[in-house]
Image 1 (tube, rainbow, N blue to C red):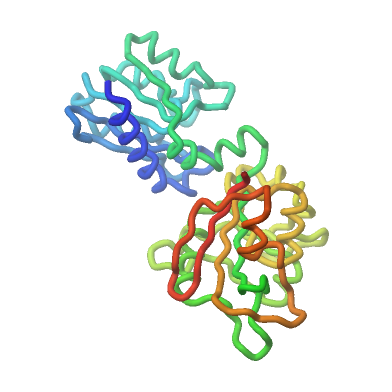
Image 2 (image 1 turned 90 degrees about the horizontal axis):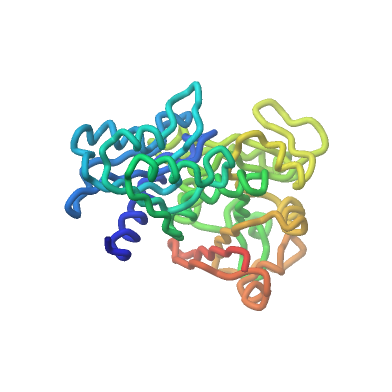
Length: 321
């Protein structure tokens, strides 16, 4: 039993889980790897609609080769029975596996601790390891289960002085094509996407995914309004109403200074993606000066966890400190 080896395989399972995002809804996107003699012999991730689960896919792929092997799985195997499929803990109990390594416990009270207990009762060694990669891959599910709302990402394109749009007559976009393509890749991971009413009426955004092969991952479209939503959209009357968004595990707030401030003031933003254009705009247009790089560097509530160049632009990723 090698701790570094376990951590490496759990990180690989977490990367595999990304293939199930967001199509696994209403279930979490889980990744599973079956390993023997230092080599992955089978893999699985949660299928669209939530079934079959990652463990079931991997065990089916491994067949008899699972006997004596180790299963690495990002989330504790479920222990509750469902009309949609068997409990993964029961499948594992009869699999002949020698060991199971879990990267994150399940906060769902129907499983919490019971999945691992059932596996151990079958004579299979089971270890729960706190894997940061596994927790990160399950962030939407964990937020939904523990807080009753989706994980919320605020996405903004800003100039160096915090403006949200170029001056009149200078086009629609602050950022270049590389940054915009990156936004579409993030949209493809989301269950829902939201803009303010003013942004909807002024810009008529499509808010879909326009990357080849990922168009089917376009998220649900929501608008922050106390009025009625237009066809093809859903209305959210306030940021606090995110708990009413059904089974959505991830929400991206994309547009409008008003919508951004409303979610920030409510303390409901878990992560910020700020695409910074290397230019100043000036003037009286919509702006969020409190989100410039300089302002956030001095802000106690946020820490920058990533930064990268996208063409001429820079992406800064922040999480709550």
